Image (cartoon, rainbow, N blue to C red; front, top):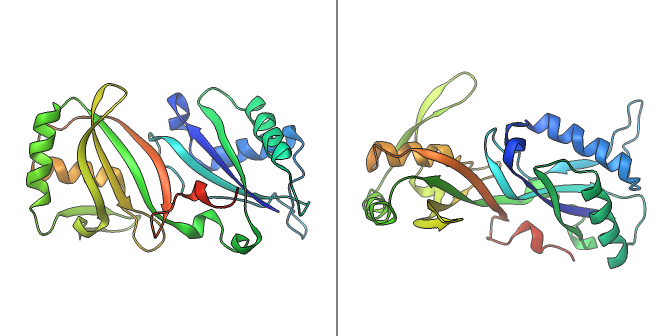
Length: 229
């Protein structure tokens, strides 16, 4: 039986890297006494995978982790017990939001392979009307070129086609930019690059205060949390 765990990562935990987060969950699962399945071989490890590693300094209310249990069946009561047990092992800034049992026809599709899009808020000091006007001008550009850095190279990339939606918004009473962008193995647009593009093309005084990932979707726009039960 495969489970999908939805969790949030906020506050000071945004400075914890992906490998440390993975080790934290491995310990939390052991402390929770969840009957997680282990790989075979000389160095068995918990069968666990994350949908899309979060960039350092970014908060999230929509992270996903898949784990596989030894048992083949699980009740709704047991799902709630796993959620509660994990939450007892969480530290400040990490919270389990939902535990989902994946149906058998989704067994081969782990969260990482499904990722296609994601929603973000970028919080800033720019007034809403100015943001709305600037984004309106930004939408008129046929191409949006930014520098994308990898380990060894820096290349100019047109990101316009990777932005699904972009608009002025509000989050927790703060002025914000909402965006849905392509993410995953084929196309992966970081929200920081969109902020860089906005500064380059229409908002040279844009100052980013917080970046928050709200949800992750598959390529068709279905939330990873809508799989299973």
